[in-house]
Image (cartoon, rainbow, N blue to C red; front, top):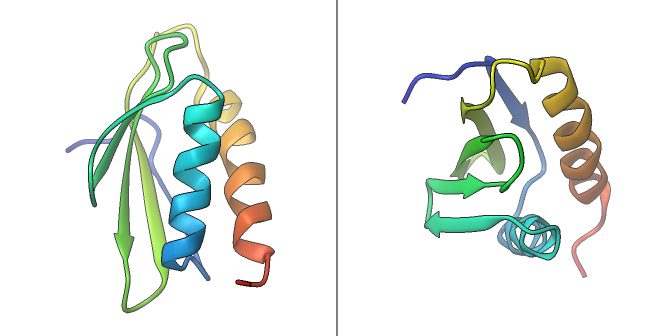
Length: 93
């Protein structure tokens, strides 16, 4: 699938962190389909994401598959990056 805003990759992503990311997205109103890759509709401004996890490398790749033209990519990433980086920096417990 083609990205409208490039691709962002996140390191140190384990299965429990994937679960935490998905839970946080749902708590914030997102609808999620699939399972690696995950298709996420954030239910705002037609923003849709695709996340693909490489379990062996513990990396998560995220692309923006759709958005309203008035929403800048920088605004989307400024919301997603801190969320995922915060979860990635945590120690699995």
